[in-house]
Structure formats: structure tokens, C-alpha cells
Length: 323
Image (cartoon, rainbow, N blue to C red):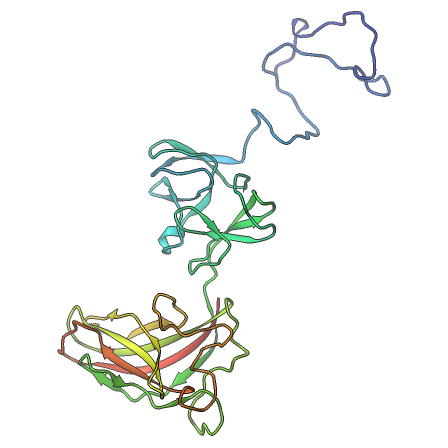
């Protein structure tokens, strides 16, 4: 430790002491040091900003242009903007950029808190958004960043996504449906949405257990067979009134060497005919026993598929999951 010398002190100039020069018991007085570097131990420090004191940041090399406030992940030893567009985009999230830096330069990453945001909602959990942004809406790849403690500050506490827990499963009886053309074929018997006169026909869930935003329903299809490399198929849910309640995207399956298990998100907004889970949960799958409340599964090869070989649907399950 460096000890001040006599030349470092402003000596007493003979003027009377007052209450700004000593404490109330006259046991300590104020002494001014000349400019220099000294090791000083503080018992208590109160201030809004500090200069020259250690910060809660570390340094990485930026692998792309990054702005202050961007959520950052590490890839290949470099800092990149995190994004919730894929699982890779939220892998190895480490903190928030505390400065704006261009690619190739060193950047400081805050890992405890960041106080440069704006418009945050106090007490709200924030997640990795798109291209380094944060979002209060939980995405599919829901990496938590932390909680807002003011409109500008998030206390950083990174949490891995919590993947779904299966709450219940409903198996829908399907005959072993074989299909080798793009023509639509029925893949199940009629399913009734409620228990009125349903007999042995299995029912899907009632309205109450499905909670929008907290729970989700997937249709899980098990199939096998063979075809050509570019072959694909689509699944449909159609009520007896002839309305398609759900249309999946085309799924490329090619020529699999074993059974395939494919899960369809029935609330996927990527297609316009997604089933609704909200004020009318699983619209068309829960309702009255009429043409709108009875439905069947249909299947076809997607456009451009060959007619070589045949695919067979072995089983269809509906999974209620907790997000």
C-alpha cells in the first residue's frame, strides 16, 4: 500500500476549525491530499456513479456490429447478438452489451445488470428477442434475461428455456392409412368433440384445462414407409361441415429407414388455419355434437411428391403440454 508523505498533505493554514473540518467529537479532522494514486479502503460508499472503480463487465471480441443494450451470446469465442429465431440463437447467452462496437473490436458485456434500456415494465420478466432485442412476450425459444427493476434497468439472471411437460395424451384411433398420391384421404374415423352420444368415440379435452399462453396442444403423428428424396405430406383437420380447421405445412419426409414421429403445433400462427387456443380453446375440437363439432383427420402427399412407395400412418396422438 502506498503511504502518503508530508509533501502530499495540505498543511494547516492557521484558520479556525469549523463543523466542516472535523466530526462532532473532534476525534477526526479532514485532510486534503495532493493529486496522486493511493490505495484507499472504504467501509461505506454512497453514490449514483463511480469513476475508476471495478465494474461488473467482461470483455469479448465482437463478431459483428453490436449496439449497447443488445443481448449477447458467445459463438466461436466471439460476441454475437442473441436471437430467438432458433435454438442456436440463444445458445451460450452471457449478458448485455454495455457499449456500441463495430465488428472486430473489443466489447464490454454486462453480466449482473444493465441500466440503459427504456420503456420497461417494472417487475416484468424479459426474454431474448430478435437480433439482440429483449421482449416481454415469451417466445418458443424462451431464454430469460432477467427482471425489470425500473423502466431502464434489468437485473440479469439468465435462465435456460423450460421445455414442455406433457400433462395428458389422447390417442385417436386411425386405421393404418396408406397414401401414395397427392389426393386427400381420410386418416381417422369421425371424432366427436363432447361426450353426448359419443359412445366409444374418444373425446378431446374440454374447455377448462386448456389455458392460453400456459398450455398448448400438439398433434403427434407416427408414420413409416418409403418414397423419394423430395417427398412430403400434409395433415388436415376438417369438420363435417367441410371446413378445414387446421392445415399443416408440407413436411419433407423423403425415404425414411425407420418410423418417423412428427409433432404439429396446432396453435402455430404460421398458417392461417391454425386451431385457436384462447377464448374458444381448440375451436372445432371442443364444442357441441353437430357438424362443426365432429371432425376427421385427412392426409395427402404434398405437391411435387412422387408416387413411388407408400407411407402408412400408424398412430395419431394429441398431447396437452405445459409450456
